[in-house]
Amino acid sequence: MRLALVPSRTGVTHCALCLRHSEAALPRGGARAQALAAAKAALERLDAAGVPWRRPADYYAEMVKSDAHMARVKAQLMHEQAQIEAADERCVPRAPGAAAGDAPRVGAP
Image: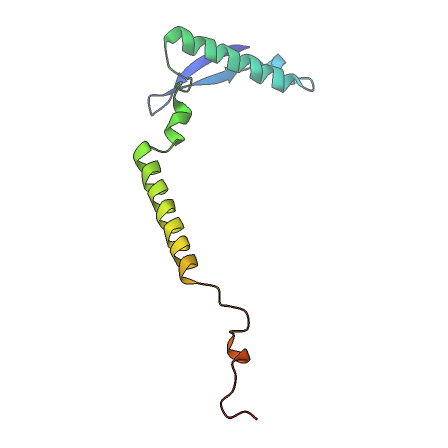
């Protein structure tokens, strides 16, 4: 088995796996082992060549929202909460028996 880095039209190299005719018929599970060996060899070559292939340490930090955005979210939530409280204050509960159906009728016997 021979591994070779093959240049592409975009200038980026990729790992090509070259097989001899005798290795073409692999036993069951051999393809996984072959792929794993090729991947390990390719990573070793990338490390030796100094090509960065790992994610940066702060990769997931880009998904976190900024402080300015979180301040806007908090302000919006506080505004909505204030509106709910104001609506609750406007809805003063009525005294029992003061509903429209319980009012005395004018001219009732």
